Length: 316
Image (cartoon, rainbow, N blue to C red; front, side, top):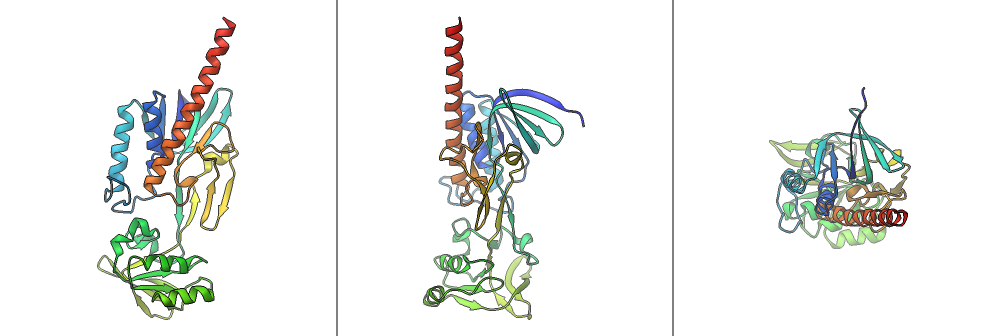
């Protein structure tokens, strides 16, 4: 593999989802040289539409990214397809190495690589993920309103999930599966809201045509449902961050990269935005996080440029 060196940029943005593209857009509009490196694996690729994004509600996720890339390029930003495997600090910033051997240099980094959803080990979940196997009610609750919804219990938050989805439909079943015994308080709450409890391990899904019709228990019993709610463990795509010495913070739903309110990590010059640092971020939150981080990156660069200008003036 031959190493090839590309020109240096003010900022390299790693990850071309909503957070990365909105960050790149903000930086390009600030007249910064920006390169976005995108692996082409958006987390919400399986969803037909995204929701709760003002003026973009119902838009296919891929369409948002297409428009975003065009806007970034319209201000002079560059976008390439590739996977970043590592980054190292240099005197003037960072050297970023891609899987194909390319090396890109940048004064600052914005990492918006997102997370990978690790689903419970039940056959059939992955194939229907983002369609009628769901997690976020604010993303999909309206689409399953008044339908039969089952919640797969795998952790301590299953009862809360069931009560949350009860806002969208009166037909909610909590499948006990591998989850812990609900507390007395939770049992009282579930009963009061009319949520049914079903014991037994879920062994698979029942599908008719291309529609989910039920969850099949290990004993063969089929619990009818039109949507199944699961809790995915969210694992950040953090290889490049870990290569720089950034540590991960554990969370009940996975892990994330801690950052200050601007998105700055423990490593100077490295910012994060989107799900890699905020597990609860929907698309609109991720986009906002990218814009906020970009503004502070630009301010940091302005401060550095000003200090250099002052030093040069004093030396003249």
